[in-house]
Length: 104
Image (cartoon, rainbow, N blue to C red):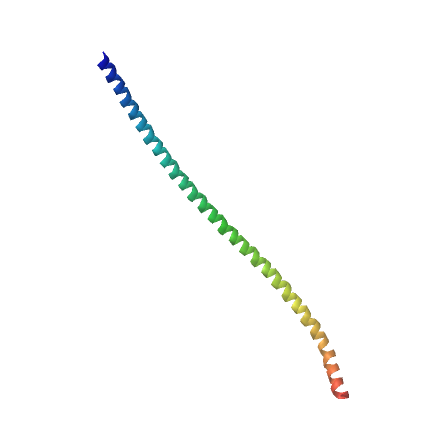
C-alpha cells in the first residue's frame, strides 16, 4: 500500500506540475496577446492623432489665409483712399510749385 500511495503522490505531483506549466504557458500567451492588442491600440490612437493634427493644420492655414485676405483688402482700400486724397491735392501742389518757381 505504501508503494501505491507513493505512486499516487508522484502522479498528483506530476499532474500538478503539468497544470502549473499549462497555467504558465496560458499566462504567457495572455500577456503576449494583451501586448499585441496594446500595440494595435497605440498605433490606431497615433494614426487618429496624426489625422487630427493634419486637420487642425489645414483649418489653421485656411483661417490664416482668410485673415490675410482681410488684411490685404483693408490695406488696398486704405491705399486707394490715400491715392484719392493725393490726387485731390495734386493741383494744389502743382500750383504751389509753380508759384515758388515763378516768384523764385
